[in-house]
Image (tube, rainbow, N blue to C red; front, side, top):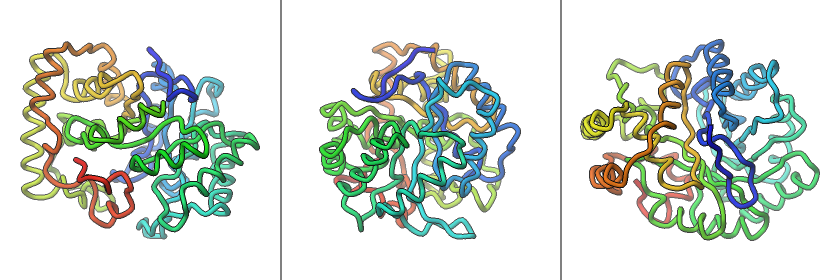
Length: 335
């Protein structure tokens, strides 16, 4: 697999990363053994970056990754961990905590669950409005100095926060949603990251399955995030599925699946961008890996750009309660 470097100071990783959240949480029931098999298949294919969060399944996802890696060579695997999200017994989100004492607590638990001596990339899941970003990054810099984390990343923050954080300690990457129908970062955030030499790890490249070509209107489990997502509701869903049909037609002309074209488009936006695929099953992973063989021509990229302009999606990326915690959404109404 080709590799890409995360920012000026980050690690070299496979050209595609594996987002592991769905193996434990958010999209309804998941199969633990299939999740582990999918991680193994990803490693065998040359994927080296595994993305997780300490709140994915309230620690379940970290334990799953630990089990998957127990029989594998850990030396060429980079684990990216988000921290700070607070949840209750019913799995509701309660907010975010980036106080220094909380960071040290979250980190200690993640190191234990993952069974590692250091985490490769550690990042606050969202901006804590009660803690200056300088204080958060300063604490993380202390953890780097102690050898408990190797690199610092950010997630879903805007340009001002990125600049303030990077002034305290080098930031290797920003994790943020980026897809054919979620192009908000192009307005400002992407330019800021490139100016500062910060990479992008792009999640939601298939818009949570909406443009994958596999979406079904079958009833979803109550625990499936998409039952509450604005883009999957009523007329919004109808409009967005029409976009998926448009992608399907373009993909047919390219000779690939809609998912493969969507992933290839994100990868084609720059060598500083690593798409994260959220495959929960080996068949979906195999399809996603097929995107690596697709080299979109200038004409094909122009066709996709025209078909999916900024702001084309119907509905917000998250419900209002969650958007309120997303610093990345404040400067503009991102798609």
